[in-house]
Length: 29
Image (cartoon, rainbow, N blue to C red; front, side, top):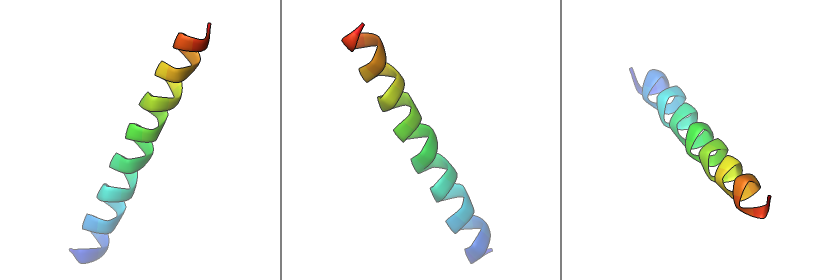
């Protein structure tokens, strides 16, 4: 269960990072 929580939090961090990256790219354009 702990490993699953780690994987989930990592996936959530990646998705949040991607959203920030996309919004930054859109703003720069």
